[in-house]
Each structure stands twice: as C-alpha cells, then as structure tokens.
Amino acid sequence: MRRECHTSFAQRVWHAPAHVSNPLLSDFFEVARRGLDHALVLLF
Image (cartoon, rainbow, N blue to C red; front, side, top):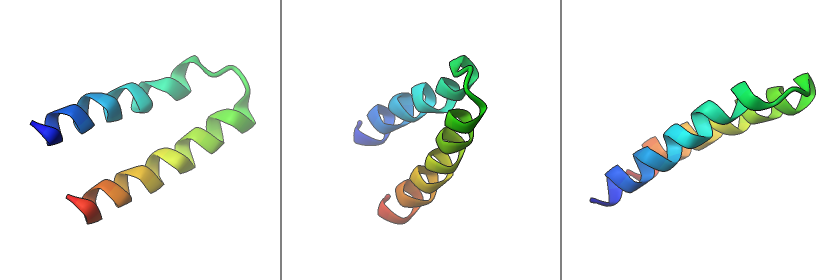
C-alpha cells in the first residue's frame, strides 16, 4: 500500500521535467529525480 503511494508520487515527479521549459530547471529535476530514485531504493 505504502509502496503504491510512493510509486504514484514518483510517476508524477518523473513526468514533471517534461513540462518545464527552463533547461536549467529541467536538469535540476533530472538530478533530483535520480537522487530520489536512489533514496527510495535504499529506504524500501
């Protein structure tokens, strides 16, 4: 249950950079997304 909640949240974060027009901000989202991915793998 908890993992599904995190998965749906992660999917929203995953698709967020596609809507960002600023390349610098998009790069930041990409780095944050990878960091979050590693954190979720370590935590769960």
